[in-house]
Image 1 (tube, helix red, strand yellow):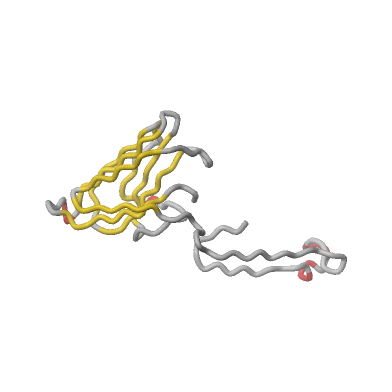
Image 2: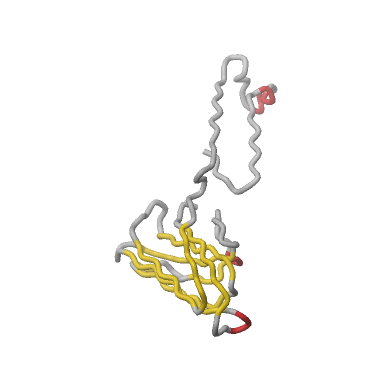
Length: 156
């Protein structure tokens, strides 16, 4: 997921909402040609690789051109705010506002893979190793690579 994501920390509310919850209002404003959406996700403030419906605590609803608004009551804690446009690769500037009945902090999360190491593995088939498909009888002799991934990742 290449959408901008923010860690949102919501402190304990002074006035206190229902069952210890606090009111949060989210607003994103952009160009009138930019369809916007926001989702506040229960994730411990960590970057998310996909959004699961059960983890969404506040949603701005359908994409709206130039403006996305949402509000709701949430428990104090750390969340991830995902801002998105309708189409993949569709980009534009926007202003984000997070309002809350409690102390609130918002900070941009680094993009996926930032600061990580990468490894390139090159290979080639030659006459000895290119033994054909499964029906060839020697398919198991084709070169193979084992990739062990312990967290959500992208393999390119």
